Amino acid sequence: MTPTPPASPGSAPTMEQVLTDYTAMREEMVAALARALGERAWRESPNSPGLRRSRVGGADPAAEQVGLVTWSFEGTYAVDDWHGAARLVAEVGRRHHFTDGGITVDRPGDLEIFGVDAHGGRYTFGMATNTILTLRTGPHRWEHPPEPADQQRT
Image 1: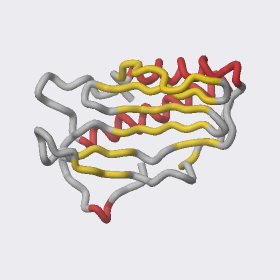
Image 2: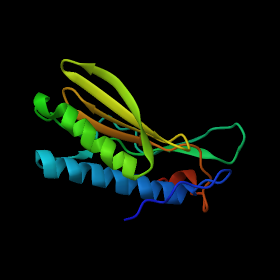
Image 3: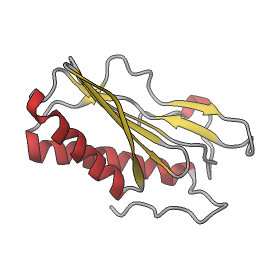
Image 4: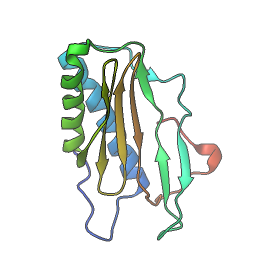
């Protein structure tokens, strides 16, 4: 799947487009890690609050942010592979128009990186006792806003 190109100034992709792109990016990140470091049992994190929608206010009161379901697997990669795993995730993020946000934590037993996109979206990839991958969109408008009861697991 080809990521949606960055929107022109003053325009933003719809939330539906962003969620499709983010879901594809997450799948590509997991696939790149599997190719390089072996398959892992990625699944919805037991601590995931699920799909979260919130209004953001500001310039566009109709815009929302969405936090996708947190993915994780029990355990982590070999410590010697951590920085390589982080590089793989960042490479996939760049293909989806994310810039390298930086390293949030880098200490023995704990590594966390993040990337950001032009619209305020963010991914976080972390390795400690377990491994996590979270995605949160920036503010976007829905083309067809779902009702709160229609929130899907993404």
